Image (cartoon, rainbow, N blue to C red; front, side, top):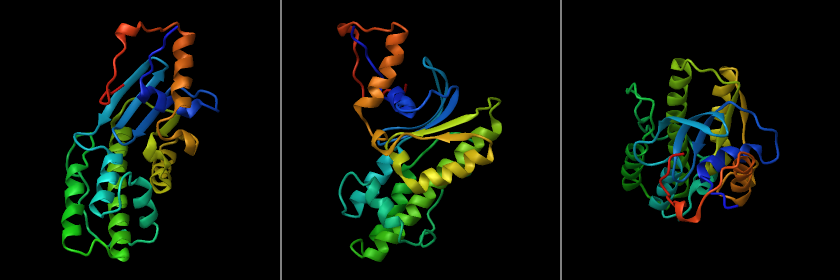
Length: 230
């Protein structure tokens, strides 16, 4: 049989490649193309409760790296620079901090970083470290603010919380998110580092669920989209 797999659902099931399935759970999907909070009830129930209004988190890391002349992809480059930087050096605005919306936005933060780069020497290593650390701190604070707003206002309570997607490999972000989920009584789950970015194992893992439930696809019905939202 032919099985068509949504790669975002694959990201969520990357949590269960080598571990027992833990559902229902609340998932934070952070990647180069998406930034979403998703309620996952079962293999076939995915409810997006927050998403980005413009750039994704991973995309913003890549663009900051590019603006610094450090190439693409930039997630690990920025994370490594940030380890030796002063995260308070640049007072960047936290996106949507005054908005009641439970949504994400990174275009404004990216623009603030661009302005800081224009006023400084982008090739100076100390500057690169400080702007990377400041950007990473504020980008993560934005995630945390909106996640906390959801957790405080939602009537649904989850025992498990999963963080998935390429950006979940960032240890700073993982540790900050872990602090929040622990304070709300949730156990945090994450995939192995090799399963965080797009990979065949996660596609196969979710494909197993489709196979078990006899969800097959006709070749003429297959759709390919880089902008699908689960």
